[in-house]
Length: 321
Image 1: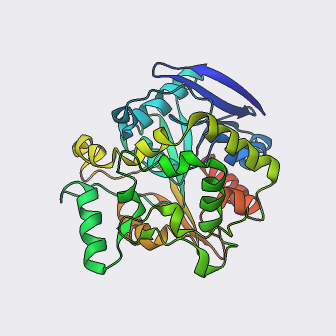
Image 2: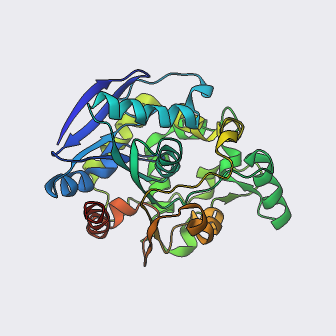
């Protein structure tokens, strides 16, 4: 596995790469990096694939813009299109986790000529609705249910990343712990916050590293986010309404390539995105499997690397039949 910087049309992307064969892109989420896929890079490369995992726009060693509006879904999908081209390839299989899953879904949705199959971990495909921008809808739903604020709504505030920047080590430790399957259920975050209370203040100071996270691995996250900050990763969330406006041309469009969705039974994201699992078969017309991993939380590829490797290798092998 090697790291290199690839200059694409949009930006200089830092990637981890290994193996030879059909191209597979692995897209990380928040607050992660390409290193979250290390186990999959190794396993898929050994299985006969060329595997590339970028530090996404706004993360790690990728050289990124500063403007909030430069982190729309069109920019993120465009980065993946540019990366495939810069790698000298014409098509690939795209796999995403957390925020990387919507990028993977939309890559397949917008460019089926390039992304011939797609898999998403933890976050199901969420089709565009004609009812208006999502942030207003999220506020209305949580208010009606008496649930306070969804953290996604709280992240819209221009200074919301400040608590994360003040102590990146504590912020990352709390995030990994609060969304991990090994953390006691009563200590996991639901994603819903009391009004005006930041996410990190709702997570116990007793938070420890999950059992799968070594001190050395964690130190790489801390170093990256200490250097780069959290403003740009938060800007992905701050483009949700803009994404809705930009994606009108996708209204009603389905993903027709072979697809796979994997979710942990104890993933807190299911509290607010789980309803979309029920309609996946409508929007993913060639859905090969929806797999629920018992006892797993949100960080699937790191919590259960062996299981995820097996599922992905089988999915990829079936594409070759």
